[in-house]
Image (tube, rainbow, N blue to C red; front, side, top):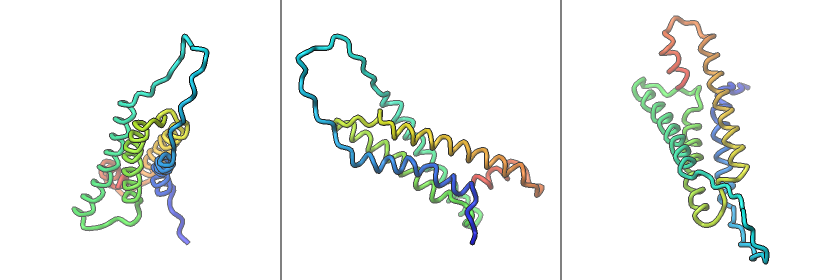
Length: 162
C-alpha cells in the first residue's frame, strides 16, 4: 500500500483546520443579554477585534488559494498533463471554501450578535494553519535540495509547487 507523502498530507491538512472551525461557527448562537446590574461600573475594559483587518486577511488568503488552484489548472492545460501526485486541487478547494466561508459566516454571525472574532478556536486554527504552511514551505525547500536532475532551480520550484 502506498502511503501519501508528507507534503500531500500537510497540504490538505493545513486548510482543513480552518474549514472545521468555519463549520463549527455555523452552530453558534448569540449570547442572551444579561440583566442590568444595580451597580454601575465606571471603568470597563473592552477589547474590540479589528474586523476590517481580519476580513481583509481572510479574503486575501482565500484569494491566494483561488490563484493556487487556477495556476494548477492553467499549468495542466498548457502541459496537457494532469499531475496525479499532488494535492493542490483538494487543498485549493478546501482553502478557498474554508477562508472565504469563515469570513462570510463570521461576518454574518457577528452582525447577528455573536462574538465570533474573539473565539479561541479561531485563533488556534489560524495558528495551526500558519505552522503547517511553514512546515510545507520547509518540506518543499528540502525536496528541492535533494533533487538532482540538471534542471534549473526556478523550474524545479514551480514544478514542486504544482
